[in-house]
Image 1 (spheres, rainbow, N blue to C red):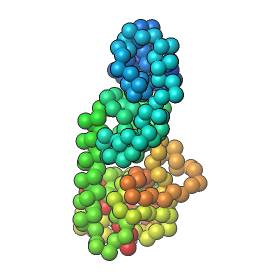
Image 2: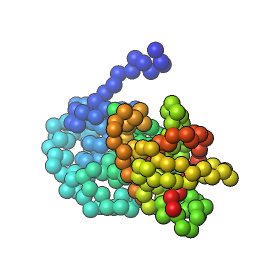
Image 3: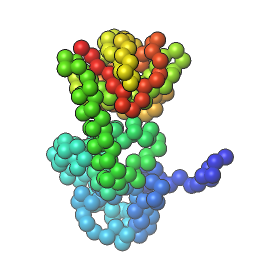
Length: 238
């Protein structure tokens, strides 16, 4: 058993989510997760440590969606809705949440997002945007779709490549050009799985092929392609 195998997992009494490694926000009679703290802060700046679980629930109930809808994400600037996700010290849009889940392989079952700060997310977003910009600069001017590659790995005889789309879209059966260093390989997409906060293994056996559009992250599956791609590589479609 690992070093932390006997640690007690605590759950938020309001929403049922796991409380992050920092222990959550203490209340007079318990503690709540970062998501519920942000919901509370959308309505009140009261000292939560002096309030009970019931009092906090009364304040945040039915207020989060109304307070957050239409506000701009502090990371990417997009308008947020009820799918916005609180982190340790801010609220981010669902697109930025998905970016972080993919970057750190965070699933819905393990919500380490509670402990991420706004500075963490902004740094990751700026880095991703820079990589997209570099891919666009390298790709041919007549490319209608471009994406930067984060990594790749083998799945049996298939290669799975994690892609962030910078321009256009990619679909099943598209013929694309993969660039690794100075080598160009033309290949046909076999399958695409849009990343939604689940590991690739969670999608592998599902008979669904998604489309990746601009700003999406996902796994593109190829046959007869070597899984040698990494940061700095890119792909495009004419």
